[in-house]
Image (cartoon, rainbow, N blue to C red; front, side, top):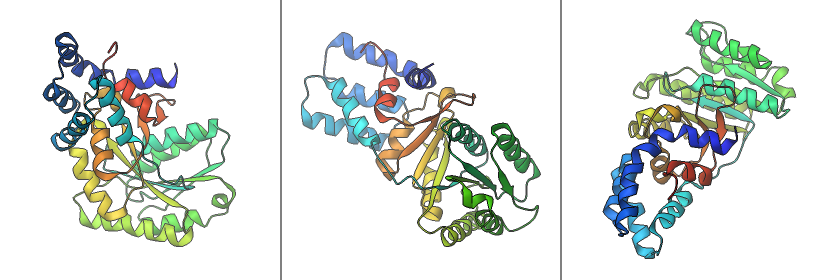
Length: 287
């Protein structure tokens, strides 16, 4: 299955939810901007962002409002940030953080890249086991901090290890944490500070968000941005939700690029994000 087909399949629930309303627009032949705004709301774009998008489309007075709408959304999603070799994965429990890291291991290995994994969740044995399983499955060398040790010390030791010095990419897993727990967020900030001291200008933070929570992802983004300033987003579980439009809301408000999307449970189902492919797959077919 091609990447475009996978994205389309992953966004099918969102697209189906919007299809009936779109059909109303086509049948009426009208410039029903209020209805188009409702379409964006159905996809969980959020009222503020949906209103801004429709206002900009109106200003252009396009002959084809659907194409104009899609172009506007593509523009919002077309963001970039530097791709750095040390990638620290952060997110709350259950967002798909460790699974996304494992799938990215598979992708990089398939591309012939040399990589190394560091685990800093030193308080949950189950987390270590899951990360170790992914590394063994993909044949990637790894270092996991000793149980009960300081997570920042674990990343320090991992980054300074001999194995870490002979690879192209280093993926660092962190403990899932409630974004409302200030102590845990400060611990995460410490991990980032240590990483930047060991590998200055080589570190990026990837925030993993579950698309199924829709607009609640905005609250998580607020807190993580304050603590560690993510430079990229991984949006997971798009295949299980009708809230695929939250990607648009995140990009519009925070101007942080979505780098990967999860559209299934398979090893190949973590895909590089393409704004045009995403928008083409988000809106109903046969428009």
